[in-house]
Picture 1 (cartoon, rainbow, N blue to C red):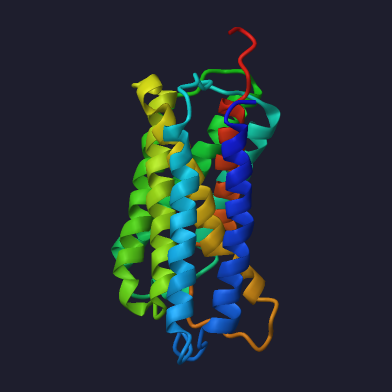
Picture 2: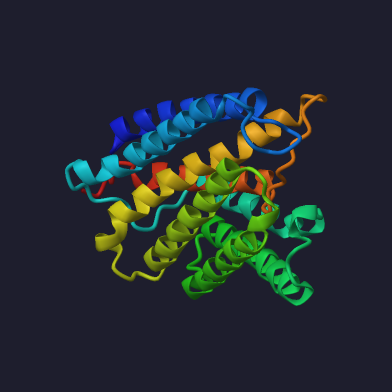
Amino acid sequence: MKNIKIFVFSAFALVSTVIIRAIQLLFLTDFKTGFYKEGMETLGSGLMAFLVITITLASSLIFASKTQRLISNPSSTLLSASMLFAGLANIVEPFFGSSSLSAVPVAFLGIRTILVVLSGFVFCYFAIAMLTERKPNSALSIVLVISWVARLMTSFICFSKMSNISENLYDILMLVFTLIFIHLFGKTLCGIGAGKTNKLLFASGIAAVLFSAASSIPFIIAQFFEQVKIVHTPTDNPITGLFMAFFISVYLVEISRENKAE
Protein backbone atom coordinates (compact mmCIF):
# COMPACT_ATOMS: atom_id res chain seq x y z
CA MET A 1 0.00 0.00 0.00
CA LYS A 2 1.42 3.36 -1.04
CA ASN A 3 1.06 6.55 1.03
CA ILE A 4 0.30 4.56 4.20
CA LYS A 5 1.66 7.32 6.46
CA ILE A 6 -0.69 9.83 4.86
CA PHE A 7 -3.66 7.53 5.46
CA VAL A 8 -2.67 7.10 9.12
CA PHE A 9 -2.39 10.85 9.68
CA SER A 10 -5.65 11.41 7.80
CA ALA A 11 -7.38 8.86 10.06
CA PHE A 12 -6.12 10.80 13.08
CA ALA A 13 -7.36 14.02 11.48
CA LEU A 14 -10.76 12.41 10.83
CA VAL A 15 -11.24 11.33 14.46
CA SER A 16 -10.05 14.72 15.73
CA THR A 17 -12.34 16.55 13.32
CA VAL A 18 -15.46 14.65 14.37
CA ILE A 19 -14.76 14.98 18.10
CA ILE A 20 -13.90 18.69 18.02
CA ARG A 21 -16.79 19.55 15.69
CA ALA A 22 -19.20 17.66 17.94
CA ILE A 23 -17.91 19.62 20.94
CA GLN A 24 -18.31 22.88 19.01
CA LEU A 25 -21.84 22.03 17.97
CA LEU A 26 -23.15 20.54 21.22
CA PHE A 27 -21.42 22.63 23.88
CA LEU A 28 -20.19 25.89 22.36
CA THR A 29 -23.13 26.81 20.13
CA ASP A 30 -26.23 28.76 21.11
CA PHE A 31 -28.99 26.76 19.40
CA LYS A 32 -31.40 29.73 19.40
CA THR A 33 -29.13 31.89 17.27
CA GLY A 34 -26.65 29.46 15.72
CA PHE A 35 -23.68 31.53 16.87
CA TYR A 36 -21.19 30.64 19.59
CA LYS A 37 -22.34 31.16 23.17
CA GLU A 38 -21.24 34.32 24.93
CA GLY A 39 -17.63 33.96 26.03
CA MET A 40 -17.05 30.92 23.79
CA GLU A 41 -16.18 32.82 20.61
CA THR A 42 -12.40 32.63 21.10
CA LEU A 43 -12.42 28.92 21.95
CA GLY A 44 -14.82 28.10 19.11
CA SER A 45 -12.79 30.07 16.56
CA GLY A 46 -9.55 28.55 17.85
CA LEU A 47 -10.89 25.02 17.45
CA MET A 48 -12.13 25.87 13.97
CA ALA A 49 -8.69 27.20 13.00
CA PHE A 50 -7.07 24.05 14.43
CA LEU A 51 -9.36 21.83 12.33
CA VAL A 52 -8.76 23.76 9.13
CA ILE A 53 -4.98 23.66 9.68
CA THR A 54 -5.08 19.92 10.47
CA ILE A 55 -7.14 19.14 7.36
CA THR A 56 -4.88 21.35 5.22
CA LEU A 57 -1.81 19.52 6.54
CA ALA A 58 -3.36 16.09 5.98
CA SER A 59 -4.30 16.90 2.39
CA SER A 60 -0.99 18.56 1.53
CA LEU A 61 1.27 15.76 2.81
CA ILE A 62 1.06 14.08 -0.59
CA PHE A 63 3.04 16.97 -2.10
CA ALA A 64 5.89 16.41 0.37
CA SER A 65 6.11 12.67 -0.35
CA LYS A 66 8.16 11.02 -3.03
CA THR A 67 6.52 10.76 -6.41
CA GLN A 68 4.71 7.44 -6.58
CA ARG A 69 2.75 6.23 -9.55
CA LEU A 70 -0.90 5.78 -8.60
CA ILE A 71 -3.28 3.43 -10.39
CA SER A 72 -5.20 5.48 -12.95
CA ASN A 73 -8.27 3.27 -13.36
CA PRO A 74 -8.79 1.17 -10.24
CA SER A 75 -11.41 -1.56 -10.20
CA SER A 76 -12.79 -3.60 -7.30
CA THR A 77 -16.08 -4.85 -5.91
CA LEU A 78 -15.80 -2.51 -2.92
CA LEU A 79 -15.21 0.51 -5.16
CA SER A 80 -18.20 -0.45 -7.30
CA ALA A 81 -20.36 -0.83 -4.20
CA SER A 82 -19.26 2.57 -2.85
CA MET A 83 -20.11 4.22 -6.18
CA LEU A 84 -23.48 2.47 -6.23
CA PHE A 85 -24.31 3.67 -2.70
CA ALA A 86 -23.21 7.21 -3.58
CA GLY A 87 -25.39 7.06 -6.69
CA LEU A 88 -28.47 5.84 -4.82
CA ALA A 89 -27.97 8.52 -2.14
CA ASN A 90 -27.92 11.21 -4.83
CA ILE A 91 -31.01 9.81 -6.54
CA VAL A 92 -33.19 9.82 -3.41
CA GLU A 93 -31.81 13.03 -1.83
CA PRO A 94 -34.04 15.56 -3.68
CA PHE A 95 -37.16 13.74 -2.49
CA PHE A 96 -36.36 14.56 1.13
CA GLY A 97 -37.26 18.25 1.22
CA SER A 98 -35.08 20.80 3.00
CA SER A 99 -36.44 24.08 4.33
CA SER A 100 -33.00 25.61 3.80
CA LEU A 101 -33.60 25.57 0.03
CA SER A 102 -36.63 27.87 0.25
CA ALA A 103 -34.51 30.85 -0.85
CA VAL A 104 -33.63 29.19 -4.17
CA PRO A 105 -35.74 30.24 -7.20
CA VAL A 106 -38.15 27.49 -8.19
CA ALA A 107 -36.76 27.17 -11.74
CA PHE A 108 -33.17 26.78 -10.56
CA LEU A 109 -34.25 24.41 -7.79
CA GLY A 110 -35.85 22.23 -10.49
CA ILE A 111 -32.63 22.26 -12.50
CA ARG A 112 -30.64 21.36 -9.39
CA THR A 113 -32.98 18.47 -8.63
CA ILE A 114 -32.64 17.07 -12.14
CA LEU A 115 -28.85 17.38 -12.07
CA VAL A 116 -28.53 15.71 -8.65
CA VAL A 117 -30.71 12.78 -9.75
CA LEU A 118 -28.80 12.47 -13.03
CA SER A 119 -25.49 12.45 -11.16
CA GLY A 120 -26.84 9.58 -9.08
CA PHE A 121 -27.66 7.58 -12.20
CA VAL A 122 -24.19 8.31 -13.60
CA PHE A 123 -22.58 6.94 -10.42
CA CYS A 124 -24.76 3.83 -10.65
CA TYR A 125 -23.85 3.44 -14.33
CA PHE A 126 -20.12 3.65 -13.55
CA ALA A 127 -20.57 1.11 -10.74
CA ILE A 128 -22.41 -1.38 -12.95
CA ALA A 129 -19.88 -0.92 -15.76
CA MET A 130 -17.06 -1.67 -13.33
CA LEU A 131 -18.82 -4.76 -11.97
CA THR A 132 -19.46 -6.09 -15.49
CA GLU A 133 -15.91 -5.18 -16.58
CA ARG A 134 -17.15 -2.92 -19.33
CA LYS A 135 -15.59 0.38 -20.33
CA PRO A 136 -17.97 3.20 -19.31
CA ASN A 137 -18.63 6.37 -21.26
CA SER A 138 -16.26 8.54 -19.25
CA ALA A 139 -17.63 11.74 -20.84
CA LEU A 140 -20.67 11.37 -18.58
CA SER A 141 -18.48 12.52 -15.69
CA ILE A 142 -19.29 16.07 -16.83
CA VAL A 143 -22.78 15.51 -15.34
CA LEU A 144 -21.17 14.97 -11.94
CA VAL A 145 -19.17 18.19 -12.23
CA ILE A 146 -22.17 20.27 -13.29
CA SER A 147 -24.36 18.84 -10.53
CA TRP A 148 -21.81 19.82 -7.87
CA VAL A 149 -21.53 23.28 -9.36
CA ALA A 150 -25.32 23.54 -8.96
CA ARG A 151 -25.03 22.36 -5.35
CA LEU A 152 -22.41 25.01 -4.66
CA MET A 153 -24.52 27.73 -6.27
CA THR A 154 -27.58 26.85 -4.18
CA SER A 155 -25.47 26.92 -1.01
CA PHE A 156 -24.33 30.46 -1.82
CA ILE A 157 -27.91 31.49 -2.57
CA CYS A 158 -28.99 30.14 0.82
CA PHE A 159 -25.93 31.59 2.56
CA SER A 160 -27.90 34.41 4.21
CA LYS A 161 -30.21 31.87 5.88
CA MET A 162 -27.32 29.96 7.49
CA SER A 163 -26.88 31.61 10.88
CA ASN A 164 -23.67 29.98 12.03
CA ILE A 165 -20.54 31.19 10.23
CA SER A 166 -18.58 28.02 11.08
CA GLU A 167 -21.35 25.89 9.59
CA ASN A 168 -21.15 27.94 6.39
CA LEU A 169 -17.42 27.34 6.20
CA TYR A 170 -17.53 23.55 6.60
CA ASP A 171 -20.45 23.13 4.17
CA ILE A 172 -18.87 25.30 1.49
CA LEU A 173 -15.40 23.73 1.81
CA MET A 174 -16.97 20.27 1.62
CA LEU A 175 -18.65 21.20 -1.66
CA VAL A 176 -15.59 22.97 -3.08
CA PHE A 177 -13.16 20.12 -2.47
CA THR A 178 -15.66 17.47 -3.56
CA LEU A 179 -16.16 19.45 -6.77
CA ILE A 180 -12.38 19.64 -7.34
CA PHE A 181 -12.05 15.91 -6.70
CA ILE A 182 -14.90 15.01 -9.07
CA HIS A 183 -13.43 17.26 -11.76
CA LEU A 184 -10.04 15.52 -11.49
CA PHE A 185 -11.74 12.13 -11.19
CA GLY A 186 -13.51 12.83 -14.49
CA LYS A 187 -10.26 13.90 -16.13
CA THR A 188 -8.63 10.67 -14.98
CA LEU A 189 -11.51 8.60 -16.38
CA CYS A 190 -11.13 10.40 -19.69
CA GLY A 191 -7.36 9.88 -19.67
CA ILE A 192 -6.62 13.61 -19.63
CA GLY A 193 -3.36 14.47 -17.86
CA ALA A 194 -3.70 11.59 -15.39
CA GLY A 195 -0.02 11.67 -14.41
CA LYS A 196 -0.01 15.41 -13.73
CA THR A 197 -3.17 15.45 -11.66
CA ASN A 198 -2.48 12.42 -9.45
CA LYS A 199 -1.26 14.34 -6.42
CA LEU A 200 -3.87 17.06 -6.72
CA LEU A 201 -6.56 14.38 -7.05
CA PHE A 202 -5.28 12.68 -3.90
CA ALA A 203 -5.01 15.94 -1.95
CA SER A 204 -8.48 17.16 -2.90
CA GLY A 205 -9.91 13.74 -2.06
CA ILE A 206 -8.44 13.80 1.46
CA ALA A 207 -9.77 17.34 2.01
CA ALA A 208 -13.21 16.40 0.65
CA VAL A 209 -13.50 13.41 3.00
CA LEU A 210 -12.41 15.36 6.08
CA PHE A 211 -14.62 18.38 5.39
CA SER A 212 -17.53 16.04 4.63
CA ALA A 213 -17.00 14.43 8.03
CA ALA A 214 -16.84 17.85 9.69
CA SER A 215 -20.05 18.94 7.99
CA SER A 216 -22.09 15.75 8.29
CA ILE A 217 -21.21 13.51 11.24
CA PRO A 218 -21.55 16.05 14.10
CA PHE A 219 -24.88 17.24 12.68
CA ILE A 220 -26.15 13.63 12.63
CA ILE A 221 -24.89 13.06 16.18
CA ALA A 222 -26.75 16.18 17.34
CA GLN A 223 -30.05 14.72 16.10
CA PHE A 224 -29.89 12.10 18.88
CA PHE A 225 -30.09 14.79 21.57
CA GLU A 226 -33.69 15.92 22.07
CA GLN A 227 -32.66 19.13 23.80
CA VAL A 228 -30.56 20.12 20.80
CA LYS A 229 -32.45 22.08 18.15
CA ILE A 230 -29.95 23.04 15.50
CA VAL A 231 -30.83 26.32 13.81
CA HIS A 232 -28.56 25.59 10.86
CA THR A 233 -29.96 23.17 8.27
CA PRO A 234 -27.53 21.90 5.60
CA THR A 235 -28.54 22.49 1.99
CA ASP A 236 -27.08 19.10 1.10
CA ASN A 237 -28.22 15.97 2.92
CA PRO A 238 -25.52 14.81 5.40
CA ILE A 239 -26.20 11.16 4.50
CA THR A 240 -25.33 11.87 0.87
CA GLY A 241 -22.16 13.60 2.06
CA LEU A 242 -21.15 10.52 4.03
CA PHE A 243 -21.75 8.15 1.12
CA MET A 244 -19.72 10.45 -1.13
CA ALA A 245 -16.94 10.53 1.48
CA PHE A 246 -17.04 6.72 1.63
CA PHE A 247 -16.71 6.48 -2.16
CA ILE A 248 -13.81 8.95 -2.22
CA SER A 249 -12.06 7.12 0.62
CA VAL A 250 -12.32 3.77 -1.15
CA TYR A 251 -11.15 5.33 -4.40
CA LEU A 252 -8.06 6.83 -2.73
CA VAL A 253 -7.20 3.48 -1.16
CA GLU A 254 -7.66 1.67 -4.48
CA ILE A 255 -5.41 4.02 -6.47
CA SER A 256 -2.75 3.63 -3.77
CA ARG A 257 -2.54 -0.15 -3.98
CA GLU A 258 0.71 -1.68 -5.16
CA ASN A 259 0.62 -2.32 -8.88
CA LYS A 260 1.67 -5.93 -9.46
CA ALA A 261 2.73 -5.04 -12.98
CA GLU A 262 5.39 -2.67 -11.69
